[in-house]
Amino acid sequence: MQNHQAFIDAARDVIGHAHVLTSDLDMYAQDWRKKYFGRPLAVLRPASTAEVAALVRLCMVHAVAIVPQGGNTGLCGASVPDASGEQVVLNLGRLNGVRSVDPANNTMTVEAGCILQTLQETAESVDRLFPLSLGAEGSCQIGGNISTNAGGVQVLRYGNTRDLVLGLEVVLPSGEILDLLRGLRKDNTGYDLKQIFIGAEGTLGIITAATLKLFPAPKASAVAFAALSSPAQAVNLLQQMRAELGERFTAFELMSDASVDLIRRHFPASPNPFAARHSWYVLMEATDGGTDAALGGLFEGALERVLEQGLIEDVALASSKAQAGELWMMRENVAEAQQIDSPNIKHDISLPISSIPEFIDEVVGTLEQTYPGVRPIIFGHLGDGNLHFNMARPLALDNARWLEQTQAVNTIVHDAVVRHRGSISAEHGIGQLKQAEMAHYKSAAELLVMRAIKRAIDPQLLMNPGKVVDMGSKS
Ligand SMILES: Cc1cc2nc3c(=O)[nH]c(=O)nc-3n(C[C@H](O)[C@H](O)[C@H](O)COP(=O)(O)OP(=O)(O)OC[C@H]3O[C@@H](n4cnc5c(N)ncnc54)[C@H](O)[C@@H]3O)c2cc1C
Image (cartoon, rainbow, N blue to C red; front, side, top):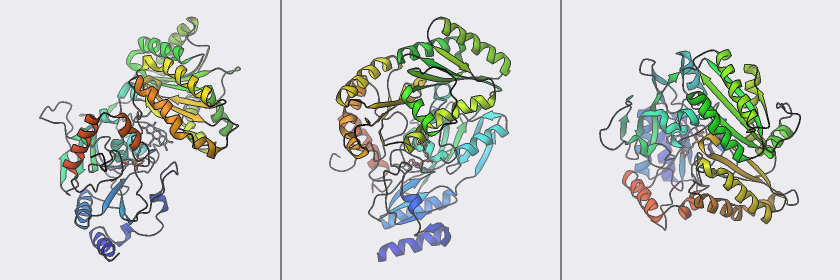
């Protein structure tokens, strides 16, 4: 305890009394899904890279474990401490400057605590696009996005966060500052060190700044909502629309009927463009640098052809930005609707797109046989092969009895994912939630390399311990 007080006093000397919090810490201690509730020793809120480095050195001297935290919207319990009262949360919210914007190089260099939406607006202000876009964009931070290699709704065209990062600045567990802030699209000078920190969930160091790619700002967009009978039709539709629209095609989001029903129940003002109910729905978007009228014409023509070919059962093309926004809002409300409804057993999986129809048939079939009445809330970024494959309880079971089945349901789903050569975590990461699952499904060789990297960079094992790779008994 004495030792802790000495640490807290020293931290206050570094960043000021007001930025070392020791009371009212609940908002930093609990994850977004309210699955994990830790007890931080303190919350440290540095405002510069130098302060982060000084705090990290201090933590190493006092052997205090660090949990980096951005917007705390992560979905795997990676951004909150354990219940020991021995770990500090290092919250990056005050490190939020835009260091430079370079429209000619199509880059911006920004600090880790910048809110994603603010960066989208920064790009817009110089007539550029920063394409990372996800439901939590109003509160997640770019440091968190990079640390989770976030996906979102425009991966189809622009890639994951990893594809949007040209340079990084990282404070290593030693307290050294690793300056990789280069805005280069070509740089073959040995190992690409930044990649190791992207998606590392704060287990290898603290990202303090990044140089990000910008793109020409789209001038026109077209959004449509289509009804289909099966995931196989959705896969065919995706191929056809990509062939018709090429690079213009930016998003292709699948939703099961049960997902749409859930959204409408909890958000009754959601649009309902079709008279009849259908088994599956797809939200699609195309953008380009031309006019809305020209792009709308192309999009409509493509949709007429797929309708004639019987690839879709019905379609509604948004006739205004407001209508397009409402359709997108509906998609973005799925996570919230599940949160309000009843607990789901959730999976964030990816598969080769061609395997998705067979996977859904097979696994939904097995689950329906095992748990009659189970409600599959399946939605996600089909264009990237990424499904949020969530199972709501059969109405005959209460919440507690359904959640008791979590491991059994996970085994059915994840065994099938691995059989189809997919991933048990497509975009949310591992955190605490999937650490055991990852250890079960990854090969011994993969785990060996992961542990070797972790030990080499963080020999005291103080960076976000207990997250991603288990350094305990299997090491
Ligand atoms: C409604 C909703 C919708 C979502 N939609 C998507 C989606 O479409 N796609 C998607 O990929 N995710 C999605 N997410 C998950 C989440 O928003 C992302 O994982 C996001 O990237 C997390 O950013 P954050 O700033 O909140 O990070 P946090 O939750 O604070 O942290 C996440 C991880 O990053 C680490 N970390 C944070 N900042 C740093 C840093 N500066 N340096 C080192 N490590 C750091 C933390 O220790 C933790 O391991 C969604 C979440 C919600 C609530």
